Length: 131
Image (cartoon, rainbow, N blue to C red; front, side, top):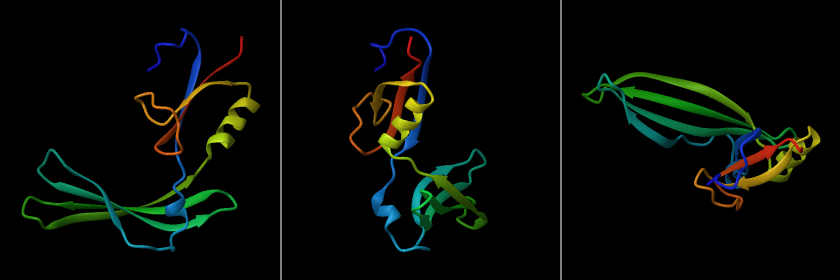
């Protein structure tokens, strides 16, 4: 993917693409299963997420991550809710911020396979300082 890049000082930034559907939903929604995995001790973990609220003026999204850990019999061992506050950034906003501090954009991708940015996935900006 990066074969065309010259050796040297590149700065790569990866941020998530704001999801308009999520930002427009009603606050304090239901938890949605995002990932499940097993721990080395045989316990099973389910990670759920729910949208709490959106601050569109400051571009800040508030969410809750809920981790549920179950033993091999299926009994709930523990659960933890972690509040997550993230600031979302749009593609051209990120580009402007990087350019304002002296970087030039080499390329922008949507994933680590090198697919061009199309408004989905990630915003992976490959930048460098001008010579």
